[in-house]
Image (cartoon, rainbow over all chains, first blue to last red):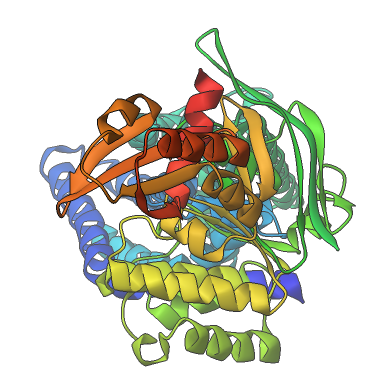
Length: 251
Length: 310
């Protein structure tokens, strides 16, 4: 029951922040959509007409994945930086529940509020790209699994932020790093280990022929579970380390 | 009855190959229902001690027992008995209303349902913020923000409450309100651990006082004992006559106030006072009035810390 209460708390906080910063939220989503629109305009003007349809589809899916990952990977770190600077973080550390579960719950709350917004943007992006906006339900399930993987990475980076504090520059670089990861053509074991990359291929298959294999699902579940478990362990490690070093909130 | 026990607490910070021994083997206890004040100059080790009790810092050595529970072994269980307001009014979410703040911080401690609902109403009333429940925390005055931070700490109804600088930057009226709250808390049987530079607050509310300097305990005693110890040694002597007293300036501070000649002396014992009075008699100096000086706690603190540094 007390874990459910923690979840209620983080849900309340996420909702309050979304409500208070709604203009900021809407603006950032509008900018994301506009950027994609201009990318498509550019491709239509300068791209090769023979492969244009395929390229736009690939870019649209890549863009949706990129958007889903930026928030999931960096949001918790931004929250922690903010909490360290205004002095809220200690209360999470002195709660009998402990910081790891509280911030994991915070990510889950974030996930619940972000998913509908993500779907709306995705539909707009697909409309601009000329892809049917009637997205198959399994596309959304895959997207959610991808986001869970992203939250796992987010926990690892948040752990690093707890220890090293001023990681803003790294967080800004991560959005470009994600592009690199999504565009890379990985072989062998790296195909499964590098985050998100495999999801893009699966998502494209779903859009093209609404088909997934058992291997795809196995990969996605194992990969997401691995990243979230490692994320929790890494965050927990750094939470203990900052307690030992006496560095909580020394922003 | 003991609520908190700290045994041989040691903490060293390492930064860029530099070691700083913040706390060097501190031991003390706080009883149920008492206001226990931790005092010391900046860098004395107060915050490290408070943070160690809250497990925000893990010490290298020493044991901390919260209601008999070893915090290093059963952290979650021990933390259920502790709540805190740290660094003034920092522990509140400025973009949430007063009510949302209470709900949020209650929830993240695992509280909920009827208990949380009732506690929110109780603490709002206690800190006199019921009418401000729907206001954004960031728009409250500093004093109100401080009271909200205290309300958040009181929400889980823990037997031990730690307050780090609760009157920092507050005006007189707000400080008085906080002071009244602390007295009420101790009357309710809560153990309040208070770390502050506000000596007036200590003088008014503390039952026992721990003074630390350079990571070591200088004194740990009842506040009344400390005040009595210092009160006995300081005297104000008002002379009746005009002559002779000038020779006694070597015994203390000689000055004039409203036309009266006054000598303030610090003595080791009451016997020395009698010796001094005998000397006045020998020199035929008449004393109009003699009183023991009520030293304030600030002076006591400064005296203790200075003598430790010497």
